[in-house]
Length: 223
Image (cartoon, rainbow, N blue to C red; front, side, top):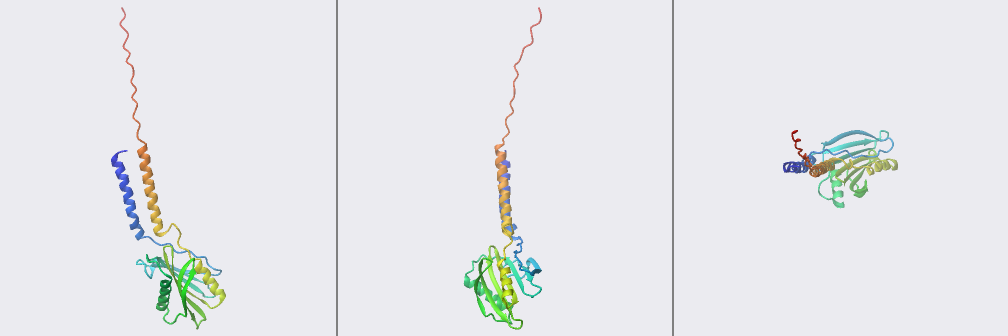
């Protein structure tokens, strides 16, 4: 294999690695998955990044679920998680701030930190007395997702259990989504390039064996 070919292959690998961050910057987050309680359904969605976000400069995605019989509902805003690591106090403060901003006609009477979908979440909660319904605001970070969830549900055990079940089932888009997808593609391409380069280096062309024939002189002329 010529030296120029080796240089070209290494250059290709370098270009692939350099392209991964740029591709990641434009990636689209997969929507989180949920397990819906009985009677619940997806009523509307806005693909990432076309919804309003809290921190992600590109935007957010939005999923809306509802039980059409009770009108209990959950809205899930999802975006890329900030690089900041949240403390419990920060999660609580952020949930309280969002509640105050988005529900100016209500004052939360309960707030703190609880476990949602296997992670710590800040929450703020109030009772809407006109409809005897709870208003719940949640903020949490799971894997590479920042989730802001809003729930409105009847103040009874059945509705609360259904909403809690849905929120606890929130899962991200999976291993092969978003930034991780581009990173995996980049790694696979580089590995393939390196393997091809090694194989080609080992498969050197064997020299052609030149067979020499013994010269046999012609017979002497007849006497």
